[in-house]
Length: 259
Image (cartoon, rainbow, N blue to C red; front, side, top):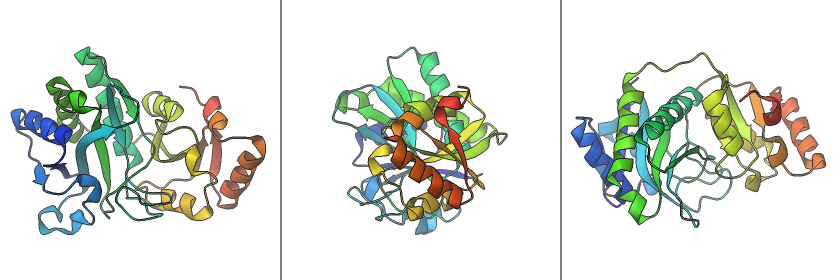
């Protein structure tokens, strides 16, 4: 698999990570526009041979935190921050799991005070090649932290060189908060590989949203894990289960998965 790494000149964390990639002799591309608004960038001639695109960026949140994150891009509803309304980007459950596990290992080895987390699917850009975002958060101090940049660079170096384990069951995740604590544990410690995640704040997910998550996952995906306590009350949860089963999807409960 040929990975292509993209960072934005406007993104402090992306430039920090790029400096660390330089020291590891890993090639990357710097673009002028902000990555989340780099619509259809995969159509440019320089990226035509890429099999999978890695966006290296900052992570920003209202609550300050020292965070290293991985997620797939896309918008389940409105496109307030790039991309297309109701459209997700293609991604790979196996690649997302691969990157998160290595990022978690590199972070532990560094002895820094960062938390590693996957996030639900959110923001742009819209592209048609499989991709993911790997980020440093959540403020200016963290974006420019050279040690954090080195962790991300080391993660990318290992992830693109090491074999990707495909002996997992690909799933999509539904429910829970933005930072997906249950899916994070499942991704790191179980036999399942989680691809797109539809969070609780998107509820109720429509048939179209669920089908978008399934079709935009590279691996054939027949199962859905529901964050059982992160899907509201029993009645809407049962309506969701009925919808999933009508789509011939196997429904699994997050609280019944060994993790």
